[in-house]
Length: 215
Image (cartoon, rainbow, N blue to C red; front, side):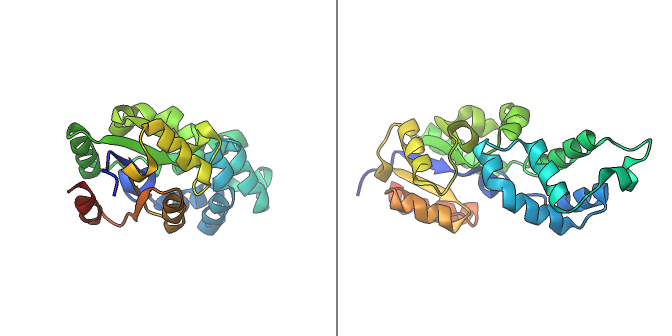
């Protein structure tokens, strides 16, 4: 087996804490629509949002249109209420902010691995808007040896090419990388590209998965 030289991490629910799903309740309150409108709509448009081909404001306009939302007849369209542009800005802000709780223990663990000579990388499905607002505030974004974000390469997991981009960015062989992600289909795709890949369920489990490979 190849010697492990790098650890590659997903962002959402790995480096970040679990998404704050109360954001969907606040979206519902802002619009008078069901929270399921936003849960389902986000899933429907997420891939192209992360790929960087669908701006966030346009995504939320689409979600509202799909739900038959008519701003001019809603309570939000009163004289003192926000314009449609302001409303979609608020919806996008709720979306992005829901991912900003960063795990201190995971950050500390990854930086410790880096200090011990392992390259650390990030491979994440990530929209432009999140990076524009928060990239400079996430310690690992600034410290890692390589970061491949979907919006910057116009690829999304589980497409094979995005894993190849990450391997190239880290400058090692695929077999020398351990990858953690919280979605099984992304793990399966990584394994198909010869990465050592494990489903992330907790930091404690990740340490157990990684330890034998570093021994």
